[in-house]
Image (cartoon, rainbow, N blue to C red; front, side):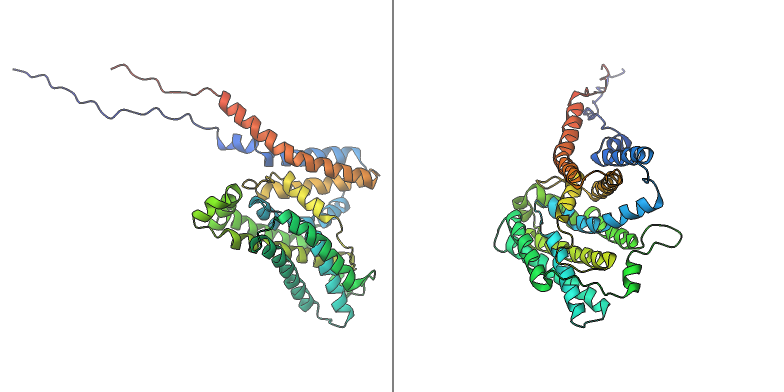
Length: 353
C-alpha cells in the first residue's frame, strides 16, 4: 500500500530589500558631480563671453593662484571632517614668509635649509593650535581666531613693513616654471603627489575612517578605541606644515617676503572646503569635491578679473559661494532622501502553495 509522505516545507524566503540606485546614478547625483558640472559650465560661458579666458596664459594664472589654496585645503578638509577648523592658516603663511625672509636677510643663504626650517616652523605653529584644542579643551574656532591675529602680529614684529626680494633668480623662476611642453607649473606635480597621499590616508586607511567617526561622534569614537585627541593634534600639525609650504611657494612665486603675504587667504580656503561638500559640523565630505571647488573658484575669480569686475564684487561673490557651500550640499542631500522615500518598495511575488 502506498503511503503518502508529508513534504516538509523548505526554509521560508525572506523578502529581498529593494535594490538601491546603480553606482553611476549615485555619482551623477552627488555634490562632487554638481561641482564638476558647474566648473565645466563656468569655463564654457567665460571662454565664449570674456576675452582672454581659455588662453594658456589664463589657465597658468588660475593654477598658480590655486596652488597655495589647494595645499592648505588638503589637510583642512580632514580637520573639518573631524568637526574642527583652523582659521590661522593665512597668518601661518605670512609668518613663514616673514621668518624665511628675515633669515635670508641675516645671511643664511642655504635655501634648502630655510625651506626645512619653514616647514618645521609651520608644524610648530599648528602644534600650538592643536595643544590648545586637545589639551586645554578650547574650541578650535576661538583658538584659531586668536592665533590668526597672533601669528600675523608676530610676522610684523619679525619683518615690519620691509620686503625681502633679493632671492636667486633660479629659485624664483623655477618655482613657477612650467612642465616641459605645457603651460602648467611644475609645482602642480608636488600638489598632485600630496593630494594622492591625503586621498589614500582618507579613503584607504583606518585613520581616514576614524576621521569620519570622530566628526559624527567623538565620544563614541573614544569608546571604540580611537585616539580622538591625538588624531586632532596631528591634523593641526599637518595643517600648519602645509600652510608653511604654501608660504614658501608664495615667497618664491612673487619673489618677495612680506608680513602681509596671503592676507585673507583663509576665506578662500574655507570657502573651497565647504563648497566642496565638507560639512561644517563634521562627519561628511571628501577631497574630490574640495579640489573641484578650488578649481571652480580659481576660474571664476580670474574670469571676473578679466571682465574688469571690481575687487569688492569679487569679495561678494566669494561670500555668496561660501553661503551656497553650506546650503547647497544639504539641499542636494535632502532632495536625494526625499526621492528615495518616494520610490515604491518592490517586493517579490509570493507563489501560492
